[in-house]
Length: 91
Image (tube, rainbow, N blue to C red; front, side, top):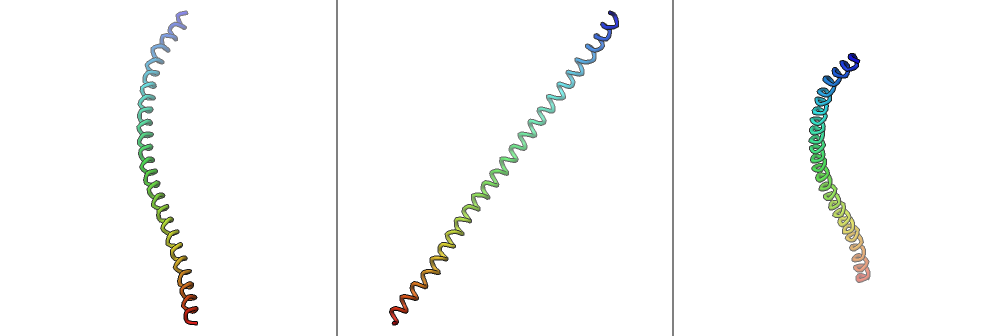
């Protein structure tokens, strides 16, 4: 059983340090990935806020356009009514 014990000893001497080194690297990668994720989340939140502001501005603009169209329609209809009244008074 000397060979088996020797192989076991070699494995025990080799594998645990490698596993520890891998665990350290994985932890470092996890920290870096978490930082990148947080950075991206911050960037996306800023972009979302910007897009939300643009959307709100567009809604205001659309509302103003609708009001102007309504007023234009009202003004176009009003002169015709006044013209008819003038014609009736003249006649």
